[in-house]
Image (cartoon, rainbow, N blue to C red; front, side):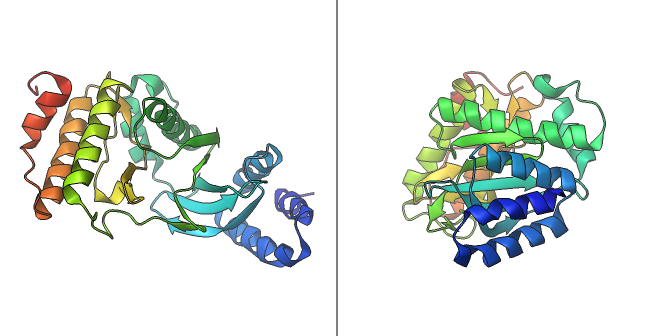
Length: 257
């Protein structure tokens, strides 16, 4: 039995009226992902991470995000990095500076698996530190499962698509999140902008794949970039945000190098 056949066979546990729709979704997934990814999804399904998939909610440069649900109906986000088309060379450059992944072999699959693992571990550390992020659920190879942020299977909007109702409040929440991430989780997001914030309506940080430990020699530069993006965005909304250099000093307790 092929990996796709195994996935489709698992769907027979569902009600008959769902079978045709679910089978079509997995056929679409089979055209996008390789057999190893399908087998990973099958194992995660058997572990109870999710029971069925509703469909894709976003398609990025490196990954697709699907809305799924577990056995009791809780929505789950499945972020699946594409093996064949992902720019693993760019990933490797960012991984190499992170002390946790400095020795990852320069091989496509190993790099993508490490990239996915790093995002999961970053979410765990951020979540445990009280940073507003999706709750991480599980991770295997190139598939990451986490809390789905939305209503009835529809994700909350990104901040790039919907301005916060109270810009001053949203700015303060995000600034506090960056500070807590740095001081308590010992991480820098490294790719923070309006593209990687969901409004629930309070802002929540997402897309932690580029997050790095403070031991990375580039971590302060990445922090500076994150803060510059926040200042730029919220100043456009009329928030009187201090210069990024001042915010950086307040967060780190020292002048930027």
